[in-house]
Structure formats: C-alpha cells, structure tokens
Length: 239
Image (tube, rainbow, N blue to C red; front, side, top):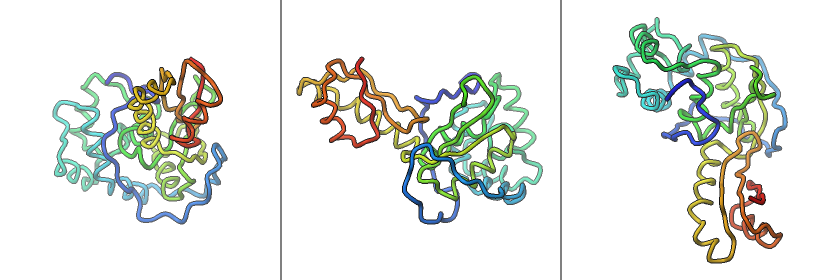
C-alpha cells in the first residue's frame, strides 16, 4: 500500500468488532442529514476507548503489512498497555519502536489516515463512509449508520488525533454492507444476463450510501427488478 489514499472503494475488508459498549436505540436513517455533535470525550477517555478495540488494531496492523510490526494479539496488548504509545500514525496504539518501523517503511500515512483506516479496514461494519467535501479540500465528512451515538463518539475521538475539519452525517448503509452489496450484484451477473439484463458495473458510493449499478439495457422494468432484489440502496444507471 502506498500513500494512504486508501481509495474510497475496493479496500480489503478484514473483520470488525463492536467498538463501544452499547449504543442508544438508533433513530430512522435520513441519508446525509447532519448529526448533532455533542462535546467529545476527553483525550484520556478516547485513548481508553481506542485501546480497547483490540480486533480493530489487529486488522489495521495486518493491513498495512509493515516488516517487524507485530500482528499478534500479544503485540496489540503490549502497545495498548504502554503509557508512552501514541495514536498519531495509524489511529491505534503504537510503541516508540513500532513508530520507527512505520516511519522507515516507505509508506506514507498522511491526512486523515487514522479515520480512513478505521472506516475501511478496522471497523467497516460500524462506519458508513469517509470523503472530502468539497473534493480536493481538507474538509472531511464521515457518515454514521443510523446516527449511532457510540460510533459518533468514536469518530470524534479519531478526528481528535489529527484535528482535521470533520463533520458527521447520518447514513443507512455501513461501508461493509455497501461492499457486500456491490459484490452480491457482481456475483449475480450471469443470472441477470439470463433474464436479458446486462449488468456491466457495480460500485459502492459511500458518500451517497448506494451501490451504483451500470446496465446496458436501461428500462423501468429492469430497474424495478434490480430494486426488488437488492432494495433501495442501489442506483441504476445506463452504461
């Protein structure tokens, strides 16, 4: 992996976990609706919350694949319990020795690397998506499925690592759910072809919480058939 442009699609998914105890009952999703941001947790509370996410830390360590960087539960626990460990590089606890490994790896984790790694790799079932708005700026948007208070609190903790301008919006579909739906559409191409529907592309758009499906023969009947199978989180376009 080169500079962390963990592109906003196509990242390898490696397990996720529940990152906070329990969330309040979610309210119905309204795609893109801004979330009310309350006072974030303090640095000490955030550090504890992030350090407890052992499976997320392991997934991120495995994903970046840096020589010498431990990818065992013991390595994750050791970093989490080290009072000198920092979160700045990858959004997970790293010891001083591990930070030197990251710095010497030739990989660049610029910008909002901590949040990008959590959304796409560490907890894709917990977050919706992350993108720049407007494109090319340094202003980030993170979408939170059903506006989960626990996920919002975690996102604020991760934002606090590099303190880049970030706002939060509600979404209906997690990043993992979107990628799974994308794969499901592609896996069904032969079935659709037998019905006369030529599915050419399928890609998850996290900023809109939809899978965009490109078909050659664009008709209302075919669109209705696709939505009947996959639900409303698809956008059918002519390709």
